[in-house]
Length: 137
Image (cartoon, rainbow, N blue to C red; front, side, top):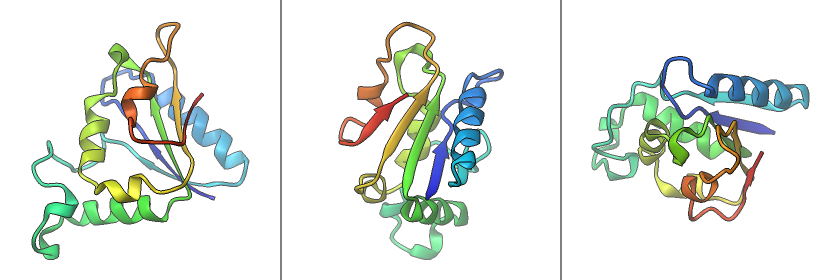
């Protein structure tokens, strides 16, 4: 299966790196093809125009088209986070808001892998309130 793993934080010393490494290693061991998307390394500015609002397709940044294609072709989407402040990290929200909602909300597994700093995982309902297939690990 093709999996896309989204990192969430851009903070120095982020817990997300550990979570992403663990998830990626385990999935590769099971034979899955892994692609990672890290907001720390993406050339996306603060959202002004999402992909589906560009009037002229030639104006869409190349990276945004590539990201959209990667998400459409994925069999599963994974979101990793250190769960800072009990909410969805802003860099992840910004990255996902650049994409049209349809590729994200197709019928495929979505996984939230987190390393909570507290005893509860409150982020699950926040990350995708409209998602029907999200599992927390």
